[in-house]
Image (cartoon, rainbow, N blue to C red):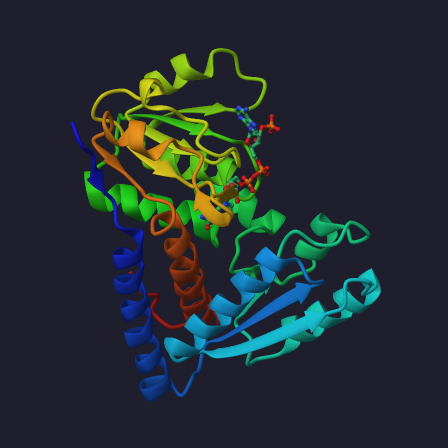
Length: 292
Ligand code: NDP
């Protein structure tokens, strides 16, 4: 069997086109320009790449992009003061603080200082609680992108066995909540789980969000299962840096029914969902109908 490739790049382009249409409508009909502020503290190279591409795509869909690059030794008080200014700024509808933050800054405190209605990453404790109780919230972008790919491929997810490997607050846990919300039977596995291959073999939907290159092998996968590979791992091969996922693609693609590639799978969906969340936040702020 050779798996269907779930093309996140193409899907994300369609999501961004819809976002751009909605932005045009907001500008022309309501004189509102959605604005996204991204805060980067320090010079982490991967974060710099993400922030650059977020800024570029924000402008491409017609939104206003506000980038705030702060020195690595920025104090917590200064960062909190900036967030307070962004919270109060009517031109800013979405605020994203790029993680990880330098270790002298308390990430939880910083994230929870963002106005929850502008928290387009969905990491504020209020949004986490709303998602966990099935209420309208801001949904974290990466799991939302995975859910969109899954819904597009399966239609209805009800009753499917889903295994999420990884329990982080930004991917694993919200992914599990979303799958539960779509009536999957959900198992969350992590580094202390016993017999991970056996757990994975029971999955109709397998989401790998671990951060270990090519950990999930083909013989861990139930024939015909859908595999979503969230991992982004940089490895050195033949003197070059290569991006690989948490799934061993070649062996997995022989067994799975469908699989996301790395790169070109979940990654592009994350940014597309960030832009979609910013439009949603803008509509909510102005009491306008939200995009579907
Ligand atoms: P974290 O490091 O926060 O979490 C990793 C999780 O994997 C933890 O729950 C950990 O378990 C679990 N884990 C680690 N080793 C094993 C193991 N050997 N067996 C089973 N479980 C294990 O990572 P993130 O959730 O932030 O990110 C996961 C991956 O997704 C990374 O590669 C990251 O780069 C990528 N990512 C991709 C995004 C995208 O847009 N495509 C966005 C965000 C992340 P425990 O809790 O027990 O330690």
